[in-house]
Image (cartoon, rainbow, N blue to C red):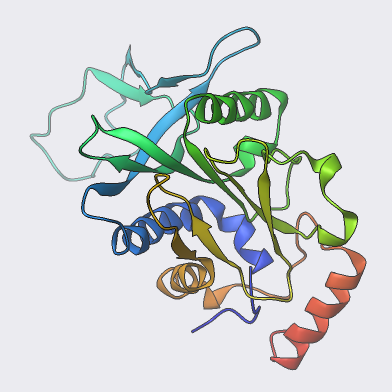
Length: 262
């Protein structure tokens, strides 16, 4: 089943961890089917950690081991089962925010990153540290001669795309946006609107200067996320957070009522 919305479904934003993970997998599959034989799209995972004055680096979570006494009748025990050993320690896993993104790699040039594709998450747009770390990552890509594709399908948080917000004409702004920075055009940002009432755009994905762009078709990816994640069970009578703008809210209400979802 498809979402009742023609483009981005704003109700998916509250399930973003799952949607983001699915988008990474489906997008890498779609991209790899189009790439030249010596390029490869891979999902990369890291942790954006740092404070003021630190450079952006890749970190992986540590494991913390604490020696504790576990009661024999505590959670997880099974009454009536004898002969079970008791643990001497409980391992507590820190759960810092994981950042996933796509990188298109040149496999014949020392695994050089050609293009990075970032699907933004709330952690990139909320909180000073999150925004600061994302902008450092952004700068690292651009200073390293990597094409950067940014896809922002969440409304929470502040604007962080590479295209300066002040340069965007008001008429070209929309709840969702995509931005492309090409190595061969360092002074230009390509911005693609993604209005609530229209299907998501097909994005050109730049590769090496000698390669033709491939196409990332966003709407089929989101449709697959909706279907495979069984999001037809969403409660469309619930309030959205953040709420839609006044005009979009009226339009969404009429759409959902017409489809019998309110």
